[in-house]
Every structure is written in structure tokens, then in C-alpha cells.
Image (cartoon, rainbow, N blue to C red; front, side, top):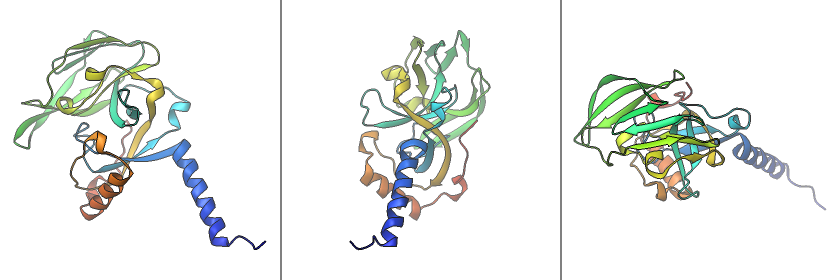
Length: 226
């Protein structure tokens, strides 16, 4: 029997290492929609830590990738704002946790596609601060919801509050649906948005190719951990 060529052995080793890393440690995702603006933009390519929640529990403020409970074949990314034991209420555009309104600070206004967008900094009870946006003319109808979160569930929201299909619309996120925690933008480019249902391997490669043609170098390496 002839010896296996060295290049083939090395290729197999590389593939095994890559598959191990992807399965247990880190996975790459691209952002197809604007539901996490201004924190994440369409065309941001992020790395997700798949190991962290084997040792710790998700916390308020974490940005998590998860299998959408409505259709687990589709991955979403949102921010955890409510954890087990919390009482979470959303009234129009205001967020309340355990009976207290989550404070926010006005940062300014921008125009996006002809719609005025108001930018705030929001601060959760554990001190995590992040930027959110509200539209003058929301794309989704305002919702008033109230949840007492049981063990094993989380309440998640998009930072782009008026353009995010999240726990206000489909309910609580089960712990077992969480894939991992986003921690860095490894590449970014100016590309058109996609519907969540359009995301697949082919569109992922296409989006990366377009991003390489239109890079946003200032976003590469941006940390997503608070």
C-alpha cells in the first residue's frame, strides 16, 4: 500500500481542527439585517464564542446568536435584557425590569432612508451600557408585553427597537436554543440586507465577496463584549 501523500495528511489535519473549532469553540456569522443597528450593521461579520455558556450563564447585555424558536433552522442575533427571575415589561418604546424603568440617555438624531431616527444609550441593572435606536415612524407596530421569566428562558430585544422581530413578538428564548455569545467583528463591508429566511451557505459566500469589494476597515476588530 502506497503511503498517503504528506499534503493530504496535512489537509485532513487542518479540516479536523477547523471542524472541531467550529463545532465546539468559535463560529463565524454575518449580519443580514438592520435589527441590531447601530451596534451591528448589515455586512458585519462576527465571531461567536460557543464555549462560554458551557461554564457560565447568559447575562443581561450579552449579544447572543440563537436558533429562532419559531423556525430553529434560522439563526438570529439579539441582546439579552431579561434573565430568569426577572419581571420584564415593554410599554410602547420603554423597557421596565423588575418594576423599574431602564434609564436611557439621549445621544442625538440621524436620518435613515428618509426616516428620523433617535439614538439613546440604555443602561441595564447590571451596568451594561449600549446604544439603541427608535424611529419617528416605526417599521413595526409598538407592543405592550409583560413576562415573568422562568428558569431556562430569556427575554431578548434588538438594539434597533422599531425594526426587530424579537421576544416582544414571538415570546421568550429557551436556553437550549442559544448557540453562543458574539465577541468581535472580524470583517465588515457595505452590502445590501437580506431577509433572515434568505441566509444560507450560498448567500453567505456572496455577502462576503461583496463585503471584500466594499470594506469598512474602521469596524474590523471592534469588540462586542462589555
